[in-house]
Amino acid sequence: MATKEQIAKEKRIASGVKEILEFRGFEITKINEDDDFMDVYAEKIGEDDEKRTALARFPKDPQVGVKTIRVLGKLQIEDEVDEALLIAEAPLTHYAKKESVKLGIEIISSSNPLFNIFDHDLVPQHTRLTNKEIKSFLTNYQIEKHQIPKILETDPAVKAIQAKPGDVLRIVRNPVMGEQGAYYRVVIKSSSRLQLTDTTKKKKPEAKAKAKPEAKAKAKPEAKAETKPEAKKEVKKESEAKTTTKATAKEKPAVKKKTKSKAKPAAKK
Image 1 (cartoon, rainbow, N blue to C red):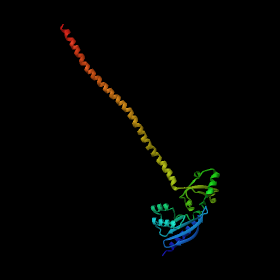
Image 2: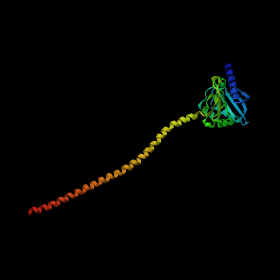
Image 3: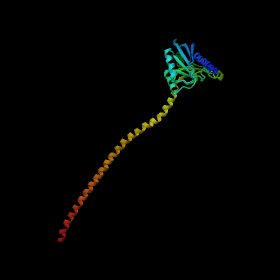
Image 4: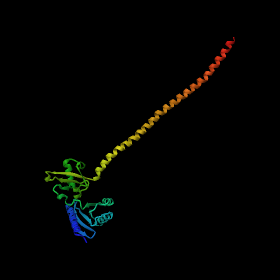
């Protein structure tokens, strides 16, 4: 038997799921509930006048694993659902998160204040621009999309309106804070900034690694080219010196013999 607290919690989450779907432009069509899950089906007409359907599932077991994600992915294919959401009470495991990204299932924490985030006075309204509005905005300001200031896809307001990387948002300034007008942001992936910082860090060791083998490759042939002829010259000099010494050594005794032979007959006379 469910306790009063559990029943109140399920009602709160159900109202929150309905609210976020209606905020995204969906209309609730039916709700299926049993002892394990509560499924909320909704549909809307998209920008291209095509009907889009959504399914938000709330598992009553707080521990959500890979099996729960795969069951929802299978149901998404069978019912031909365009957008699937899973409301989880406890944090998902690493493998469950990986599986949800693979199947394109959006995970929303029940403790995350996405349901009523724009009800707060200090949170400005965020709206997605259509493709026509983006083109007119870029032509009026004579800029390109990558020149628009950025906002991460992990931002709570971006999650609430289900904006994706590449979408352009119009954020109306809050008059309560003394601000007027609107400003625009383009949604980017949360990993894009990390990749930029990682690439800048990796450039330095790569430059050093490239410089070292080039220096070694240049130094080796130069050293060989300089040392080999010098060594040959020294060997030649040493060989020439040995031949000269041998020649002088042979010539000296020949000179002594001639002098002795000439001196003896002169003394007898």
